Image (tube, rainbow, N blue to C red; front, side, top):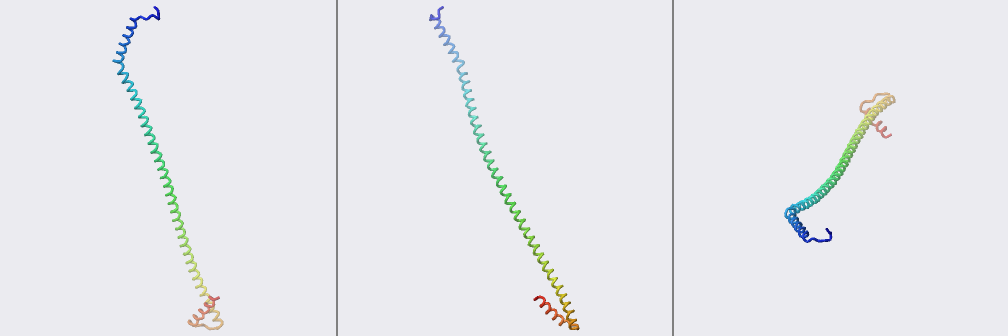
Length: 163
């Protein structure tokens, strides 16, 4: 057999077999193949759509989280600011209370000092009066009656106050 020889009967049978095979393939295999390719294409498109949706959802969630984080940071800053304001109010109130108590103690001390000074002046006047009376008795060698005694004491006290 020669490879270059063409047998017309063989060509006809080959074309007939190919046509039958192509017809059977088209009749029974084309639809399942087409459906399989369509399903694959649909599943790939669904996967791409799901990936895009997941990406959009992830972006939305990330944006939400960033907004929540910014809100939380702002809230923390407000809480710190309010804490400072409250601390300043407490310090101011404590300072005012301390100043008030200090002023009360100073006023009380001043009243006590004035009372003690008045008491000391009263004792001093009594002692001066006694000394003046004793000195006068010795000088005059007599006892004074109550009115002259009072007049003598008042003049002595006035003179001591001036000095």
